[in-house]
Image (cartoon, rainbow, N blue to C red; front, top):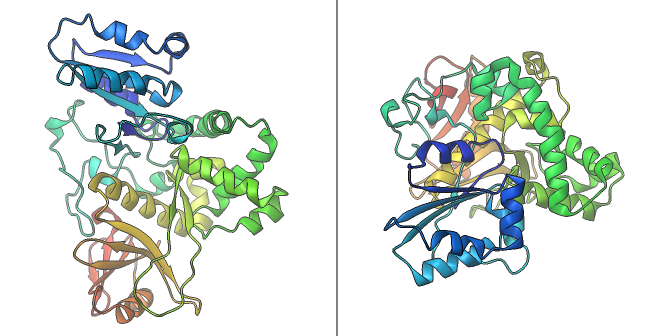
Amino acid sequence: MVLGARQTGKSTLFQRILQRDSLLIDLQERPERTRFAQDPGLLTRTLLPAKKKVLHVFIDEIQRVPDLLDEIQLLLDRLPKRFIFTVTGSSARRLRRGPVNLLPGRVHRYFLSPVSLWEQSGKRVWTLLKPPRVPSPAKFPSGQLFPMRPIEEVLTLGSLPAAFVEGQGFQKTLQSYAEAYIEEEVLREMAARNLGQYGRFLQLAGVESGKPISLTKISQESGIAISTIRGFYEVLEDTLLGFKLPPFSGSSRTRILKTPKFYFFDVGVRNAVAGLPLDKKILATEGGNLFEHWVACELQARIGYLGRSQRLSYWRTVDGAEVDFVLETPREVMPIEVKYTRNPRPADAAGLEHFIARHPSRARRGFVVCRCQRPEQLTEHVQAIPWEEL
């Protein structure tokens, strides 16, 4: 099962890897969706006559007809070596709601993120978290990696695949994504009808993305009940449009803040829903926030591909000490600070050294991610690294 927000490339991936004798069932198409929704048993009747010994079946947007999972279970039980199923979904909400068969013990779950740094051509230096199986360009169906783009463009338009193709023309696509998909699709997920209320929340959630969640603040500014706002955030997570970043829960006795942060899954989408102008002028005031947001999405994507042995969090104490991110691996804990600067200074490492001093048994080194040209040793334990070498 491949899960990911809309426009991350799930359908395109299917089209690339489909074999000539594979079967594709696209539930985004209304006629196809209606046929299988009215008669889920049609899947079994369609597949049983297949003459091929092993048939690979691709089903796109399975959450639209979750009853098909029962049919998949039936086929796998009756003919375990006859079929291979690959399904995609852009919402975990429908799959968790109600008596849905999630095929326990039979399904491998993967998440597809926007284009990550490791999928782009350019340098191949991985300082913090080596991505999984970095392939050569020849192994990509297109014959090449995505091109590297200036970080300023990434922070403005984000990293959805279409942004690499359309360039600045992607501005209109992003606006349409925010207006049409996020509002209409998410409201459909909730079976709700109050578009105005949800629209007010969405813009404020975009502005607040990357900060500790404040239900009270958003409620006061939007006039929406806290319970409703809490439900809206749950929908954004369930539809894979964002993720929560928990506070670091180390063994230190220091009192820390316990409120999670929330990030939209893509910087460009965040800008669009926040109603910000989609051009580089916003970097004059938002550059630091957007740079931090991009690092969060990049690290979260790699963790999603590598598995649960890695964990990302943030650290902030009640007395004001803070670190943007804490990356936990099986071997160590690494504090990370993000600075939208080309000239890092030793003072930028103060929070990281403070964290390392409080967690000496687990943290031995820290990093400042910035726009410097090459790595620099700032303090005894902290190194500044270029964003390309993240």
